[in-house]
Image (cartoon, rainbow over all chains, first blue to last red; front, side):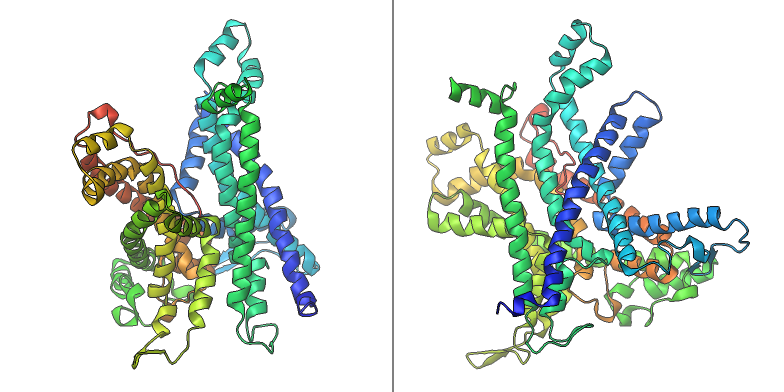
Amino acid sequence: MACYLTTASHLALYRSVLVVLVLLALAAPLALGIGFLGALAMRSRNALLRPLGTLYVSMVRGVPDIIFFLFVPFAIDQGVEYARHRILCPDWDQPVRQGNDFIVCAAAKMPLATDPAWVHDLWGFLLALAAFALVFGAFAANTLQGAMAAVPRGQLETAEAYGMTPGQAFRRILLPQMWVYALPGLSNLWMILTKATPLLFLLGIQDVVYWARELGGQKTGVYAYPHPDWRVWYFMGVLAFYLLLTWSSQKVFDRLMVRMSHGQATAGGEALRRAGA
Amino acid sequence: MTFESCAESFRGLILRSMGREFGDRLLPRGLEIDTCDQVFLIASGLVWNVYFATLALFFGFFLATAVALGKASPRAWARKPAEAFVFLFRGSPLFVQFFFIYEALVLLPREGITLAGITLDTQWTTRAWAGALFVLFLNTSAYTAEIFHGALKAIPKGDLEAADAYGLTGFAKFRRVVWPTMLRLAWPSYTNEAIFLLHATTLVFFSAFPAWQQMGDALYYANYFAAQTFNPFIAYPLVGLYFILMTLAVIGLFGAVNRRLNRHLPREARARFRFRPQYIR
């Protein structure tokens, strides 16, 4: 049994768990950053920025996200290849779209056909990361915008009365206070992000779903195993992995919420104050 | 692309998602594909999204009510299983649930199960129209149960005391006070649940369930076209547009119900719908 669970392909399964965790670790801060910029755009007084931010957020939210996960990597891949094609091969005279083909010169391929396999894997991963950051950036923008609006007006008016500039009021008053309002939404987003990671499989990345299918199957593209169809057991393992992930994140968020509520003018903060007194 | 070729596409493809008998035997391939093909074939796939969403929502409504009541029950034998059910289906990705239940259904004996002399056929359970519907039904039940449970907890104490004062007990109290109030309070969130169940139906043919005879949903066809033409810029925005329209239809439909549920209340006390989605399951 121990021997079976440490075969080379099982090690690949464990590595794919790592891929999922790396994606989570990178996508979450990226999405938060994009979301922050998006929220600022939605709040700005600039006549160009505000509609742009609102359009971005409402477009991503109104459409099933799987469409974006399929569309964004495809579109970025072609966009990058097209840009490189224009720069690297200026004397190419044929159109890029010929019938149903998308043809760029060999030097503009991304990644190059001569690159080793890991570069291709990395490029695929980066495209997936871009899709996740873009979709979850829109969700985060919506949450953060709501949180910024939820900070009581009196707090900002007081800041103005103290003679702070809008920038100072934003940095010193709004920014520290908004997180307690944002946290429930952000924790919800984190759960959703966690549960979206199996969609990596759709993007052609060898994640846990891929390996569960490969290892459990009787006969797959790669190997023929001597055991019967065990996929259901492997997927039960994947299911347990995700349940553990969401359950433990919930515990962390609960503790974080308690800590953030300290000294805040909310029901949670008031309860903490009473308990302490 | 002429009007005639477009009408031809319409006849051949608008019902194609229901099977080969209802349109062209083969899907358009490669250079044959024009924009009209994409418009009509993707639209025809919407039938499956609507089918999965409405039936899962309908059956899920009853199971969700039962689970929510179980979760709110003081008796452990009712509460524990309900909590476990909700945790299992809300804590794991729908995508993995599809795979897991599909593989479990595949393991059913192929020749059928013999029960008391009658042989029950099991083959159909692995087909998308039954198996995927079953998964979606369980999944939406769990999410809806959580919404209904929250609404049960939020029923004003005064309403329940008034029911007691009128001498209502047991089922009569549930049917005439608890249930209508729960529905009224839950409805805005339930609208979001309906929208996102509709969106989640696009996952069916990307998970384990095979699209038999190329009968697929809207996103299945959009993906097919994007792969065939190597051009994602027509098919995906098109399916996105269809889903925005369907989302608006759901909001309109559920908004009408919401108005009916709230018709006895003054205007400012009514529960408003806010688009606050669960995004991905």
